[in-house]
Image (tube, rainbow, N blue to C red; front, side, top):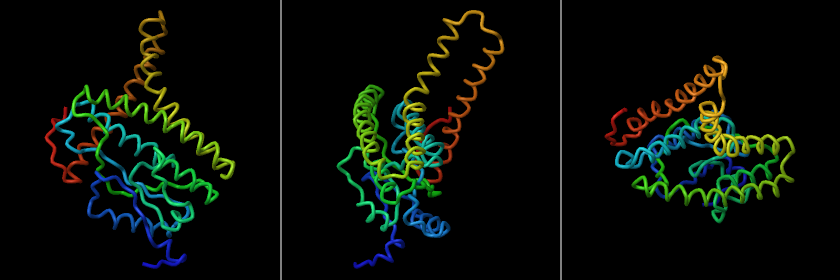
Length: 259
């Protein structure tokens, strides 16, 4: 089918994994979002929220929580702060052609193509959420033991992939406007370096230090620490509340007790 340059803004491409399950209204929701935003072919990438409810009722609690947190972080950070897309996302054919499409040879091809596309469009790309959930198969083990092995495998993969992305960004940042490169690089560093890598360790070590190292701390400090812990737990509980509705929306048959 021959498509002219002028028609490429009207063609949307979606990249996905083999174990993805789209709701029937995905194309309609994507098209509606694209038209409402006045067809931003070269400025916007479309990301649906991903959920990992493939037979989670038969897997361990650790596996389930890992999937919930991945979805939660996507909704709360990756999409609203325009950090990066993940595995299943849509874009215009004009953006794909101008940015030399997606290179699957990279481990993190979704982040790599985002960096490259910022260079060819000379701006920071917006990530717009498609308001329908998509089911994605989780990278996880069937038991806690296999889950730990999978964590070790993913840690090695993400370490190599993160170094690959960092090197790629340093090389390509010369072609990206300074403000766009600085703002995206800062957001990327805060999310992956601070929130994911050090946030949990800081919470754990601060709690242990308050209990075993700090003696006779003022009562107000203790209240602040416990208040922050309660706020963190309340925030995480939202992920479980969201997951109560997702299986019903996506017609996923699960048998899991709420507690």
